[in-house]
Length: 118
Image (cartoon, rainbow, N blue to C red):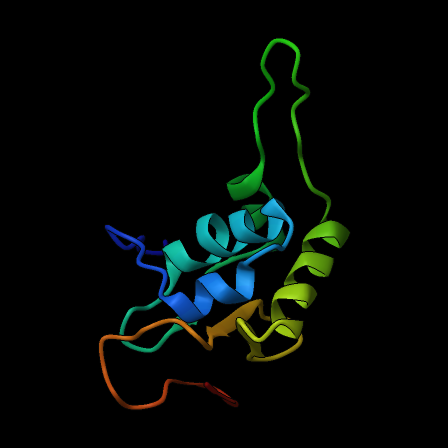
């Protein structure tokens, strides 16, 4: 099971990268990825397409339809987060792991994850 940090701090570089982007990207980055980030390394390595979709799913209410996301939609959103410089894909093609490139870390050394260095 993946540990969830007790608080999420977004720095100005992260906020600027997400500025004027779709709200789904912000939600995926914060609720799906950053809450699982290892604060020492900046790496998120405990997610799946299913868990990310669950993390950003919104329940319906009267007058507002529920919103859920497919694996392909999650893939496209992750690709956008990579394109804007927030994430770098890490690990093998079978493993869903990312380095949060702009996030503050609790140490000064660059994170490593297999073949991934932020």
